Image (tube, rainbow, N blue to C red; front, side, top):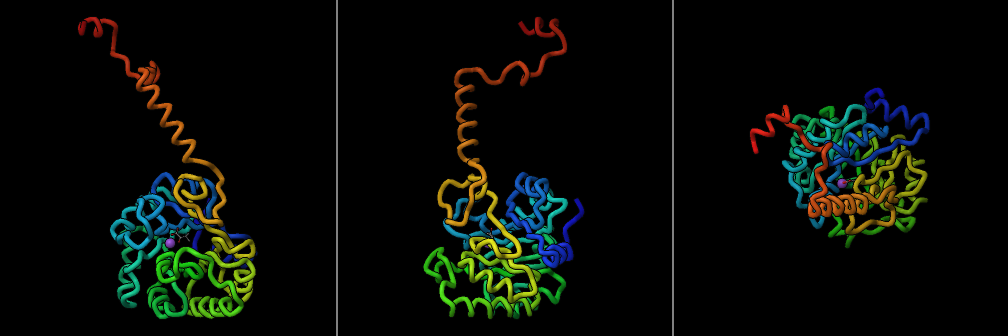
Length: 277
Ligand code: KIV
Ligand code: NA
């Protein structure tokens, strides 16, 4: 499969072919996304919750992100690679945002960055895109701000809310975002925004009428057994599958059934074995 670039994303959008995005947090999950034909692999800061066990996304550091970015990059050939700017690494100033975006590119081997927020982030987006770094916006439910939003809840449920969200979407488009993640808004709102924009929307909990979709890989594979939002479809139950496989391993170790002959190295000759007896 040829390498996906921002041009590929634009071309898919122009041809009305849905963009398939998925998160990856390490080498194996990146390899799975690559092999399965994902267009855009996102090293989302959902990493904090689903892979590192933090309560929310706001504790993860730049260094933690960078380490996972590098692993994802090593496992990816084709997908376009985007990483989240962690909470606290882009809000202080436009310079801070650009500096940390550059780190995700240079040290994380990413190709673009994602940041959360609406119209108030437009100047920051402009600063980063002017340096030649593709920016993916993120509006609607913005998990880094879940405390001030009063929790992880659906956004823009009124016409007024939808129009305000559209203003943000348009400001981010004008600032140079190549696409926008639209999270946890009613389907008619995502449709309204998608129709008004000239860049793709990547929906998560935003209905079928977005230009593409994204899910958290560990959520959709059923690997994360704590909490799952309404919008997660579980395509597998990896937690159960993995837990029962590990339980069988434990049983076989206790019963001295594993390892069998085929998992064991022989010596050079029978003679060598005799010399040990
Ligand atoms: O952190 C993440 O995985 C995300 C996606 C769910 C959009 O931001
Ligand atoms: Na995120």
